[in-house]
Length: 132
Image 1 (spheres, rainbow, N blue to C red):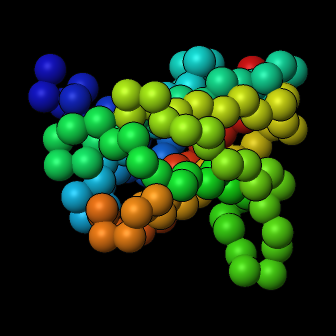
Image 2 (cartoon, rainbow, N blue to C red):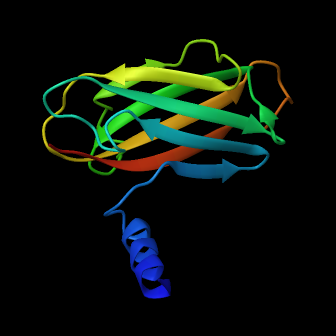
C-alpha cells in the first residue's frame, strides 16, 4: 500500500496525474476541480470550478482572473483565454473552457482583493492536460 501511494505521489509531483489540486498563497487556499476527471476536454466544453478559502472561511470578495496558456506561460505570448470569474458564491467560482487541442496547458489564477488589505494578492499555476 505504501509503495502504491508513493508511486501516485511521485506521478502527481511530476504533473502526470492531477487530483483536485489545492494550492495556498499567504492566507488564501484554492482548490481546482474540473468536470472531466481533472482533464480538459478536446471535443466539448470543460467546466472548471474553484473553491476559495481565506483563513479557513469561504472567500467571497475577490477579483479573480483565469488565464490559460498552451504549455508554459511566457511574457512574450498572450494567453489563449483571459477570463474573469464572476462574483464568488459561498467561496465558489467557475468558468467554462471550450474544447481545446490535445496537449498540455497551464491555467493561471490571479486573485486580488476587492477591498484593499482583506488578503494579499495571489497568483497560482495549475498544469492541466487536454485529452480524450
